[in-house]
Image 1 (cartoon, rainbow, N blue to C red):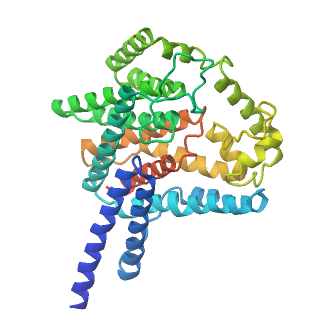
Image 2 (cartoon, helix red, strand yellow):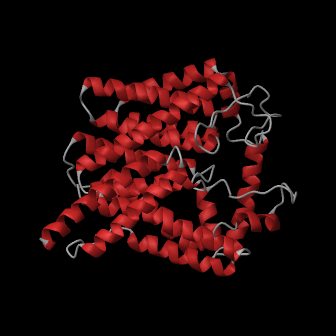
Image 3 (cartoon, rainbow, N blue to C red):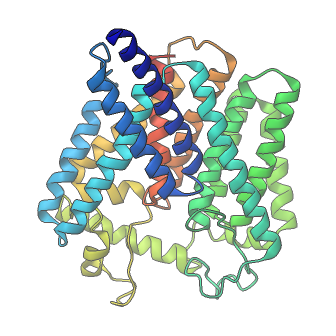
Length: 406
């Protein structure tokens, strides 16, 4: 009886852990606090199952060594941080939230059916985010006191939606991910009704993206869709080109913003260029241990040649590559980027034959989504935001599941 009871308990734990993963996936874009609670509950069940079932073993993932380098270097960077307690708290977030999310997904999701369930949870959450974005756009938002609007450069820009996310740029990077997954599913699924629904979802997602007026994210998804179209679907390429032309023709504010994308014509672009120059100097001065995880806001004033105002706080470099290299050193930053680009490569170049078209579509979508993170990271630190990083580590965990288990 003891064996049967233990098996029943183990099965119940598996179901409970899977439910926790689904809830974390659903709430990442809606309530990070609830998502973290779900992740914690799932990890508690996972640890108990590991202790209870002697036959349950952990499975290695391809880039554990790179993750280990990143985390060890992150811990070492605490020693040189100007605020060691704060950097320690950042490191705990890295380990207890991001890495645990990756472990929870990669060790407990084992079937194509479970992957499909996660896709539905993430999709339902995305639908709510997009609908709320439309609501904000219709009702209107007072942007007069919001720091991410350059009122002098763009006096006509009266509202930029951010939905349930922190600001329009973070929402836009998230919507790029959603659009990429929808595109991946559209490319692999054959049912006409399903493809029609995917097209409708993609149109709504891109419309919400346009409402953010986030130049980098809009350019990123255009590049990804045109690149995919050029390689795989010339019809899609023509549709995207036509859609971009129509949007820019009908929306002079967007056209005005996009025209300043690569110039110092507005304070946002000018500030980024100055920050990147300062951050390069940080990396040169602290190549081994960095300046300390999360310590950018404390160190930047020393290198600031643009703002020179102690009352203004800049928390990241608006570039994930420079930011990671500056904060955790060159070796730590490279560990993280090996993990990121290794997962991206696995999504695109997997030699495994996946069991169904849905899994193939999710794998392609994840690969495109990781490309969007990499491209958006050139002009913004899209991973500074906690739910954005949770989502990234979850996506990388799903790539492992599809590559190693499904």
